[in-house]
Image (cartoon, rainbow, N blue to C red; front, top):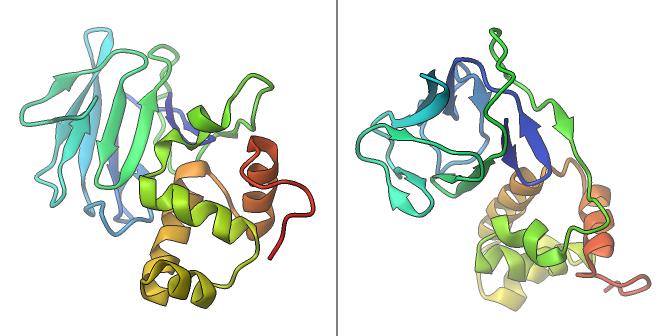
Length: 184
């Protein structure tokens, strides 16, 4: 399985990751190429190969130049998207286009580990969104454009497996990023 934030994907023996509609796992992020990388199950383990992507593929922070064999726990980066390989067994033969689980937060998951997938700038924007500030207010406070804030909001939602502002606020409360009653 491949985990991104709170979302898990079951992998087929060959899985294409990318932004394009023909990708097995489709990522809605402009930093990801249409056909970014390929995961293949070879001799009992997954390998990842970069498919000449614009922003590159990384394994545990190292750029992928040739196919790299993965182990459970490895961190995979595609553009600004971060994943973790969490299980290597139990393959399915069908293509996977949607996440199979939104795993929620367990009692022992700390805010640091749950939000580790976010970039420093995204960690700065996350509590402002949770407090209910508008994108225009956040843009003014952070000295960026409204479009930039929208991009950060999209990336945060994608990385954490959030589908609405209510999910974002709930997660912020659960992780202690936002305290009950602390709104704008």
